[in-house]
Image (cartoon, rainbow, N blue to C red):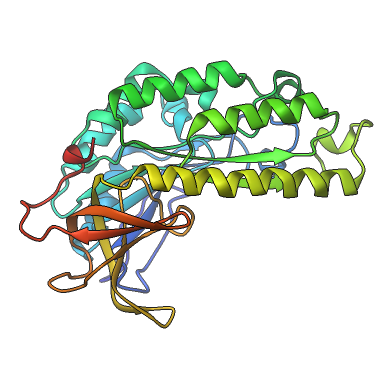
Length: 333
């Protein structure tokens, strides 16, 4: 039907656009094959099942016809896309095809597993025109003992090395992550190790959550749980640190030229900012935004160059450079 996305397959999402936003999500897969001890998702969403590339491409073409300028690829673990189709590097192959679709000006990939990051995927995310150099990396913690209890892999130094590799290829790359504090068995030394990682990682956005049991998970059966007041204290402590660090990271971007997708023009929350949008390092709703010093000449859905002249917490304040050539994500690297 007119206005309804093309679909195929038993799990294909039938969708109709309900608004005129220049941004839309596109589902890459359903389910998850990882068995993190704190997560119940595999128990009710099943195994990881990738959508066929043709379906993803067709849906993106349809969205472009509806006026979408940025697509965000979503699943429980985008680094695994294609493994059940016989090609674990399918995402690297598909990204250039998505980015070349007429009308699509930015492709963003969400939710990546640090332990599954590979050189080819890093290269694709940092060097493909119109693909945002953006890394939503699910670190969760950085202390080895806690990660093992979570059934995850890595440590502070390996994670920092991964970030160094990314930034060596794309210095302005955006990185965000979520973390769980107060996990069963977490010691003060473990928490200090997490703080060491956060301080060195220079993340653009940080989500911090206190551990709580999820029914049906392995972690819910652990006996070495922390008292709730300890969990709450650690949550407050790390949240304060995270807030300071993301504000510092935003300040580091003052003077940078960023490429901003304009999402609204006019007043925002009662304040006359002129226009608001998001740079390549900012995902919708979670990572802050760019507040323009002037909305003159700006239209929703356009990507414009802007110079960062200040910050408001995690948000950037930027002056649009309207005399610039049309922008692509290639110029943002």
